[in-house]
Length: 486
Image 1 (cartoon, rainbow, N blue to C red):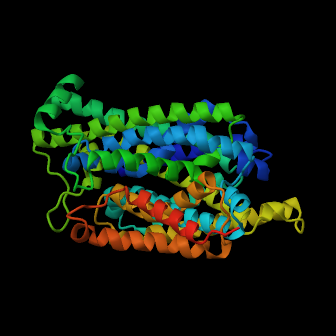
Image 2 (image 1 turned 180 degrees about the vertical axis):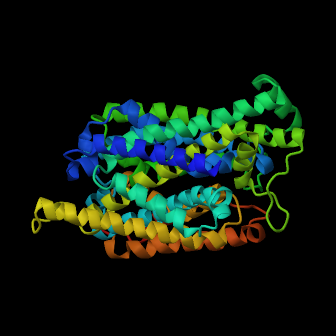
Image 3 (image 1 turned 90 degrees about the vertical axis):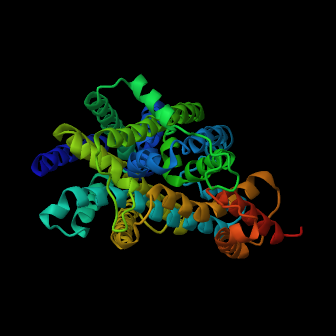
């Protein structure tokens, strides 16, 4: 089976390189950074589904149903509110200013230090978040395939990074837009195929499965305990602000939107994508319910760690490999697709941010266009190396569902971005630009301390993903304190 899976992996990778060849011919810096502003909006919308889901949603959302039922759904419903803000507040701003890097807005509105501060928080956020998404893909393939061959963990990690580096090296965002469509297709196919095989093995219809899940309490959506970090109102609010920050203030996601021809196209893309994402997440939740029900009905032993605790992130792959040879192969291809989609756009976005916001190479008159391309390629490779190091370093610390870890990280690193943009958009004040990094660092530190002690200090209240909102408010307050008096 391992040989067949490896062959499928090679064939899939060759498909990606074919798309790369077609999209990167005569590529320039404008192709790499902006896709020549010619991307069809519906292609961007479809491809962004895979980029948003990634390997974490692919495994952590279905696996999370085991312990959390459908309480992830209110978070997804909150996404819709966030996407409306992006479509009708942020996208008009970005198109009006004709931005390539969205953090250039901070430079124009507040100052160069603020621009670098915002882009630095994005770089930290994306390097950590996207590397963890990619880590999960490598981890599962290692556990179920490479480990049996005696291959060290770092080798498949290196192979993945090199492949992603190669197919994004020239075409950049234009290549990513089109490869994401392929990856979205295989990611969704893996979920649907696994669900169909479970229904077939249990000899039950989808309607019958839903009825069984409802009766067993597996579809519980709303956690009504306000102390809980899964309290549904907190989830909805958190979903809205997670979307605004992790999509609307995220260079990776917005760079794809900014390749659309017009603002109206970008807005159509965003609305279509938001509705599609809700449907897809519901599919993955039902897949998670089907996995748990399958284990209950067949006596399948769910994967556990050394302490005997079920590992949520391993439930989907364990069942997929046990169902049939075909589901195992489709799962691996879907997983590989999820891994690629979570990393390719990130490398391009990180390169764009550093190029435009840190060294302002786009404005430099000292270098020829050929020299600028060479610098851009060096930056691209450097971020790929950092990416690989984070993936390798994280393995000893993987002890919970990674979707929680990623949102925990985002709550601290995207909060200052939320505060910076809110201050810029909704006030007319100028600030003492050199003090902005102090505010941006203090805000997440205060939030971290508060989260650690919230149960003791706030009558049992537990912070969930809504910590990002508090972080943004504290950043706004700090900017108000350092505002200029005139």
